[in-house]
Length: 134
Ligand code: T46
Image (cartoon, helix red, strand yellow):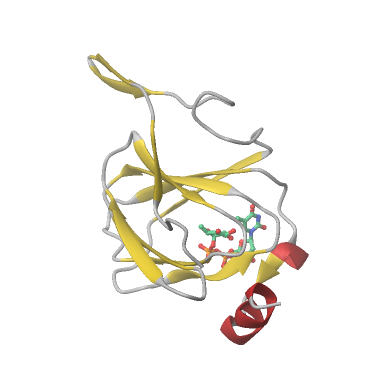
């Protein structure tokens, strides 16, 4: 399967005293946003994620610090270091993802297309491979 795994989304970054970034649908985010969440204070060396979603679509922004996002569609892997608050990565459904190399001050902001539903997660890599190869 030949598709680009890392799809970056660049937001406007307005220089004020500091900066101001904004994201709105459909200009920057390709889905109506149903949920936001953010992750911080992650211990060094911890890997988060390690799952895929059946339907939920997301965009990840590292609004402080940096974090490496590893993407895997079952055929190939790619990664991106998020370190600019106005540059995010689109996380499409059925892409296995992991977050590595959190810094002490990293804050990861996630915009999601669906409400939280545990049944949307596939947390077993073997199950993920079965789903994408169907
Ligand atoms: C994802 C990556 C990028 C909720 O109750 N509501 C929520 O909206 C979320 C996101 C999580 N949770 C609960 C579910 C678990 O009991 O929070 C707990 C930790 O979630 P999880 O282990 O899935 O966290 P991460 O950091 O591995 O993954 C998260 C998102 O869950 C996931 O959808 O794509 O960030």
